[in-house]
Length: 177
Image 1 (cartoon, rainbow, N blue to C red):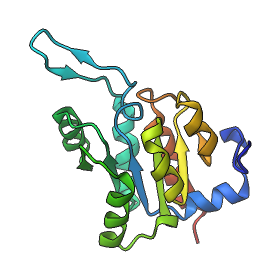
Image 2 (tube, rainbow, N blue to C red; image 1 turned 60 degrees about the vertical axis):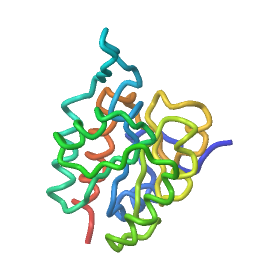
Image 3 (cartoon, rainbow, N blue to C red; image 1 turned 120 degrees about the vertical axis):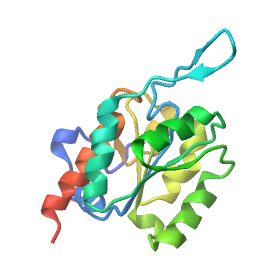
Image 4 (spheres, rainbow, N blue to C red; image 1 turned 90 degrees about the vertical axis):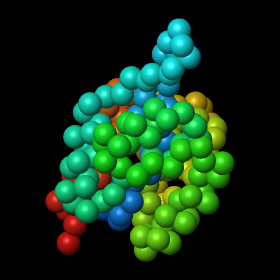
């Protein structure tokens, strides 16, 4: 089934432009969104991931417009927290219910779900993708996520997907009245 928002990013519908203009909080999954969904395990068992530096520039651009970004991840590894510290974003790791975290964060910041955007890639993201005003999938998300997403990015996770959505949201500020 096709979403009313299905289209290439070059032809964003007026409805999708309105959704982007209304975003006041950006939520991100970690593995498969900020990373390419792979993990490097050392001989001692330490895990490392690869992230795109471009994503940090996008997040900083959003911050300059007063739109906070937060990572909401079921991953428990401390690498999530280390990367979030570097990016200057709040980190919720080891999360069992992403919707509960988003609802609590929204209440804290005074942001209703319809003014939240979430970027996900896998089945554990489905509930939050449906809870927020705009659910976004990276290009290489699993089919179930691609089906429910209001917007599918051109970039894969770990390859500038976060930069892409940040640029779209920040760009919508130029059209805000």
